[in-house]
Length: 433
Image 1: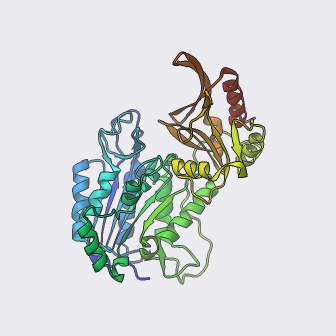
Image 2: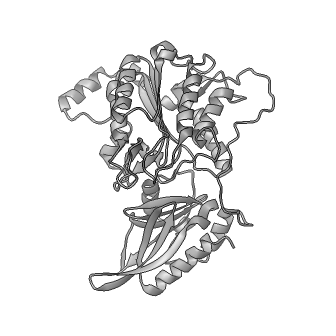
Image 3: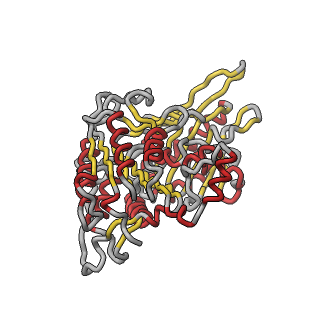
């Protein structure tokens, strides 16, 4: 399949590395990654865009300037558009993603940010004539871009996510049905994210680029041996996902529409090159606690067998309806097996979809309806656990508070003895001994 016409395509690459808030670390690697991607997209061995067709923006660019650049690039292109953002990603209380700029406030995501939905709508509206547009996000919680919200998507949100909403005017809908042709399938979009809706992205200490971006750069620079003359977005995503999974890092997610993940291609530098051993870009491992003697997921499975059956439901005992809600809430792919699901209970009522513990093959998830996190098993020792009590309508209730990387989830409510039992069981899971 041919590469999109470089003369009729554009790219906007945004790397935000400077932040004024003490709660948001500096990310110079984000700016470096945007610059390097820009040079690669101009390389004829990758895509061959003209220098004037690539816009690289950094921390000196305001939110308005970035949106205008995206609008102008989309309007100028007639074939394809690629828009890339690297920096901090923030979630509001509704679970919606905000792209952070230098004046962003970590506690108030509405300040100093561009809501992702706005970012996407500018691309969608200005680029409605394009054959394909692609958004690439390297930021924390970027997977929330896939559905616009962490929770279960509504029908309208699903339509918006694939940017194909049903027309509100029946006459217009009928007209569109009559004029639809096979050429309509030449148009579509794709969103590639560095991680899920509940996980952070990382920059390894001393690395030149963010971890996900480093892998993308490596594939564009070196290609993938054993593949054809071109590489699709799906090829790129699968390769990055495999590499990051092997390191125990958060895995990227792909949200395609109308086959763009296969139709959008760039040249494969490794095609027809002699096979030789080459070292990939070295990404320094993140500092982590010393690993346990057992593999983390094996140890988690073993300890989960000791959890009371009324605290967690394991394996095939998980009802399909519960499994579907859990996967929608945390954006867990079908390919990731659910080991166990725990639900809080008080006064005889379950809190399905709000207060949950979920154990997959590689990640431990927790939610209390307003906050959530996903913790890889290799980092379970970083989860802090405490029990607190409160009163609700005169009834005493106890919660098990779980804190991971600044995200605090109050799991409960329980009775006092059951809360201590849950705390003890979770403490065994997170202990390194």
